[in-house]
Image 1 (cartoon, rainbow, N blue to C red):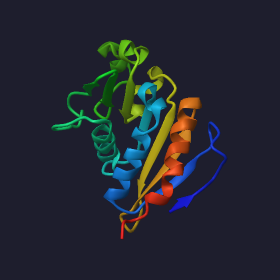
Image 2 (tube, rainbow, N blue to C red):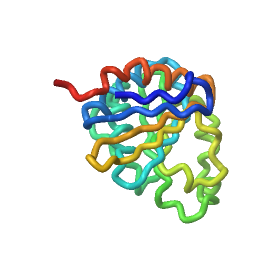
Image 3 (cartoon, rainbow, N blue to C red):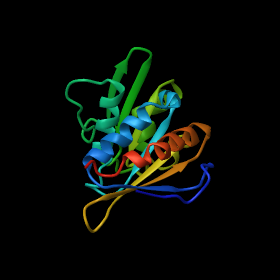
Length: 174
């Protein structure tokens, strides 16, 4: 199910309803199919338990990452590599001061080619580059997830368009 609030332009929020975890997996597959993903910076926002790491796990699996996919909550970053694609999954939840971003040397990673997936981006303050796509996950009263997609670049618009095109397949499988 989809609520459409725009025409796929940067800064416009599109909202999707994820009825169950399999809908999250299908969204991840749709995003993985967009060629622009390989150079995107994606912010994942939401409270603890909203499904940020779950979405990242499904996305990494859809891209071809095999084996255990760990949450970077304690390590702050988990790198992954596929032929022709570098991926970094960040979790800044434990940052007490945005200056920790600069101290950790992450600017070089963000300046390099590859996919960057960032949980808790607000903890890095103004040190992060502008995200191509912001995903805001919220848990509804019935435990379904709602995800807001805010594209902030041409890459973000392409990713948002891919997600919206696949939105009819996000409803619960029957």
